[in-house]
Length: 292
Image (tube, rainbow, N blue to C red; front, side):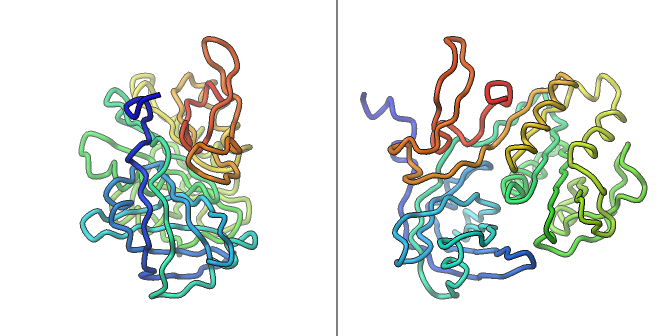
């Protein structure tokens, strides 16, 4: 195989990134900003990076990218402390450096014929949706609607949204401040009774919105989602019901993160029959129809 046959050659960068800021939130959630110019310049919505959490743990952790500034060279990561690696990462302080490898993976694709994208993020699937929303809101031809769900407190203080969204119940008013600042229509969902949030699944809220659209408007919708596997499966079923295209970003345990170990393979449907694909470099974004 030649170098030109390897789409990821020369697109993944290894950097020693300085910690610019490191904030903690309820629910063992953390927002990490790293100075990583190469990653910031090349990342796209859906990309992730492989971080060495600590010199004590050589094995890296894959973490989705939430925001980047190519001009200033920083990259934001929102993560949850769940194990030994992320517990060590949570202890890192401003001024220290972290080895980062990225950006990795195929991003979400936006299609001009679908100018009304519905973005759905759940739990640790929030970051790619924020990255995608920030990219889309700068395009006056695209009108995204973002639904974010969490069963732990959101890593921000929800605020009443200033945007009226057709089909959304009047008491569902909570929004993400960052999205509100950008003027991106958004709502929050949870089963935990958080004020102003939809008391149910993200797919219930999506259904309210889809049912409010006429046939012409619905034909402009494409769904893009990231979150836990059960949520993605529910989103895929919803899209099948409404005959909507859907892209999903999968989350799998990874060792190498660059396609060498094949430890993150998933079965997908192809014209030739079932095949195994690596989430790290063949994904993490897939057409929902081939996964579910």
